[in-house]
Image 1 (cartoon, rainbow, N blue to C red):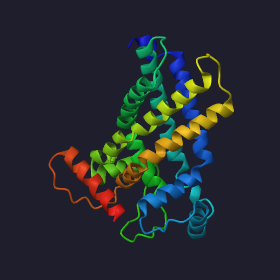
Image 2 (cartoon, rainbow, N blue to C red):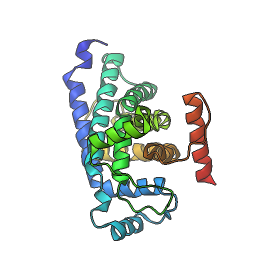
Image 3 (cartoon, rainbow, N blue to C red):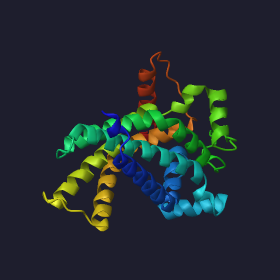
Length: 264
């Protein structure tokens, strides 16, 4: 990969537009993300319809509760999507060199960009998960409250109390979850090629919106159980009974136990 490919204007434009787009979307749908995270982490909370869960959160914690933790989430999302889109388009430009892309190529490049993104930005996501859940009224009494004053204080407290490795909690399911954007991109690029039918035309905003929504819905449905485990691990309040010396075996055992407990 040449320096001009890594630091190209086109990659920067894709990265900035990807970050801005995701921040806008997350801001609009943030209450839904709040409801999702509560259901994933607080296993004693009954799964109802989304409006019922949000109404319950507002009643228990106030009107602004669905938007709690917005700023750290937006910071993390901005960094994460910037890294992902930048890597994706750098790798794509250097690999294809002007040739037509194929779904398998998009999948491989998507996975590579996702791995880089996970390794770089997981500490941000661990911190924002905890900040977002701070002050929540949990139905599970085993969850103890945290007291972070902001992003930097959360970093300091986690490193001091749990060790620096805790900032990468949930890295293993996150690495498996790189399949999510990779599947999404593969389906998206495939649908885009079908709509163009070999003609190099620009798609309308509505077409892009529809195929993007279809691609994301399929990718999320396929990988959702791992997203639940990822949230629990990032929150850091789970009983890890694994005695494995190997981090990989310990991670696999923890994931298996959490999945089995959820199913049970």
